[in-house]
Image (cartoon, rainbow, N blue to C red; front, side, top):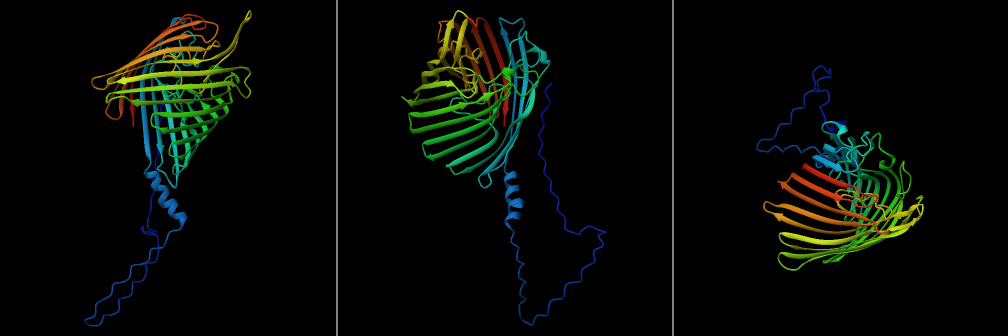
Length: 458
C-alpha cells in the first residue's frame, strides 16, 4: 500500500534580551546621571539618536535577504482522484484501478537570481492493489496494465540561476518538456510524473530566438522505483544530451531544430539508446473573427547510438492541418514512425523508430497500444473534431487508422472520446473513453479503456 505523503516545513525563531529573566544574578546597573540644569529661558536640546550599527554582508544575507526569499516563496498542492478501467481481449480479467495522486511542493522567491524547489509525490491505491496489473509490479499477469503503481518519492528537487533573459540554468531533479512532448516530456497523464536528474540551460540571446541544452544522468519513469517491476519498466541510467533551437520571428510560424542523443540503460539493456536529428515548422493564422487555420510539418532521422545492440536507421514524419470555426475545431494528420526491418524465413529482424522519453498518451491513440512501436514501424492516419458545448464543456472525438510502415500488416483502428469541465480556478473533472480494434500480429487484440477523474490544483 502506498504511504500518505506529508511534507511540513516549520520555522521558529526566539529572541530574548540577555539577562532579562529573573534569577540571572546580574548586578543592577547604576542610575543614569541627572542632566545638567538649563539656563533660564534656554531650550533643552534633545539628545541625538544613537547611530544604528551597519550590518555586515553576512548578517544582511542570513538575517534579511534569505528569510525574505523563503517567506515570499509559494507552496503548490495537486490532488488527482482517478478511476481507470481496462478490458483487453487477450487477458482473462479486467483491470480496475482507483488511485489518488498527491503532490506537495515549495518554491522559493528569487534571490540574486537563484531559486530552489522541492516537491514530493504519492500515489495511493484505493482498495485492493490486486484489482489491476500495476505495470508488472504486483504479480497480476492475468490483467491488463495500468501504469500507476503505488509509490512515494521526491518528484522534483532543483536549484536554478537566472540572469535576465540571457540565461537560466537549472540543476537537479526536474521536469523537462520540449515542444509537443513527442520526444521529450513528463508523461503528466500518468499519476506518477516522469522527471529527470539533469542540468538544463535555456537562453534567449535575441527576442525571437530560444536555445536549450540539457544533460540527463537519470530518468525517473512513470512506473516509479518500486519492487517487482519487470526489467523493461525500470528507471534509466543516462548519459544523454538534448539540444533544441527555436525561432518565432514570424507570427504565423515557429521553426524548430533539435538533436537528441539518448544513451539509456536499465535492467533490460541499452536497446532504447538512439540519436535523433530533426525539425518542424508549425503555426496558425486567423482567417476571420471566428475562423482560424493551423498546420504542422515535421521530419526526423534516427539511428542507433552509444551502446545500443541494434543497427538501424529510419525516419519520422508528421503532417497535420486543422481549422477552428467557433465553436467547432477539426483537423487531420498523418504520422509515420519508420522501420528498418527485413523479413526472413526465420522471422522479422530490424528496428523501428523509438521515443523512449516521450509523453506517449496523446499520440497514436489513447488506448496506448503503441507506446512501444512494433519492429515493422507504424503509420497513423487520424482525424479529430472538437465542439465547445454550453457552460464551456469541450467534447472531443478522434479516429485513428493504423498500419505497419513495412511488410504490409494491418494494425486496426481506434476511436477516442473525451469531455472535461473546469470549476472555478482550482477544480477540473475529465471523462475519457478509448476503443481499439486490433487486426494483425503483434497487436491482434481489442482494448477498451475508461477514465473518470477529479483534479484539484493550487
